[in-house]
Image (tube, rainbow, N blue to C red):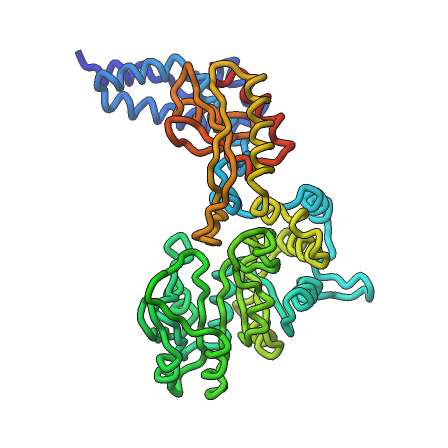
Length: 468
């Protein structure tokens, strides 16, 4: 028997399917083009199964054919469902790159929506009724908060480093320690950034040790800058040594070249006040003598994705005038969000409570235990088919920050009784608001450090019936 021919004959024609009541209803809701596209994709999938025509493929073909209308509807509805959705982060990783890194305070997010949903004074001086500068107030805030002479903002920190080097070191050498040639994520590496800027990298020292004389010996007439990269996403221990910015400043002053420092995950608040290890603040970097400093906006700062550049005014002015600056400038969403977040830092006493990232990082084990017990009781009361307990765990900052810091806390550990752990995790991702946890010891762990109090009720409500 010719299985392939038989299966191909069963594939309906496009016009026949489109004339069905189900497709007419879908067309009325979503438009003819979207329904046609979904139909053609489903028919293409049927042809692929018919072409293989193995026993498993024949079964899958018959099942897909019997569910054709429903599968088309699912495809169409998926087209109109945003891929970027709100999720609940139960992983315990505060700056989760895959989940958007730093969350914004709810009231700031609401104000941001009202500000940018219509027209906004992004480049309009309301006081004088004339054209204004896009990031003028942001730059002023950054100067006040860091002590830098001037500042500017671009769309991420990689762009910031690229723009700075393009402006200050194009066609010249940039000296970097071999111990600081880091990869900043997504296989995006400092040597690549330097190359793209039009500068030439000159490596000095070794992986574990670099001395001041290594920099001095490397200086030539072609040297245009010294770059120091803070290894924010890893640490080297043992027989190690690096050169501080004040030492580099003395060396650079001999040739009248700038010291550029890439802080990576920049922080404006002293994390030791939260019981965490010390992370150099931007203010400390400014006071140490770095001429230009770059850092991220969406990591330990707790704001939107942005590349922030602060430093000496004469150098920042050059950076602003570089043609590439316009290509990497921030939009009104980023500018508005960053301004609102930076304004919060004007009142340092309230920062740990107001900035979600700092609030999560600073939560004590006692607090996390009480909150985990509360969520546990809510789940026990709402759900059947699971066992729930509170366990000690450790959280991470994530986002390339505080790589060695394991923050003690607590998690709600959910063990399904009638389905597999993998199936429970899959169903959690299909909830109206997807819940993302960790799978450990054949259970789903929800670390409460990264779950807000007002999300507890939603989790319990959505879990009801899911494990059964």
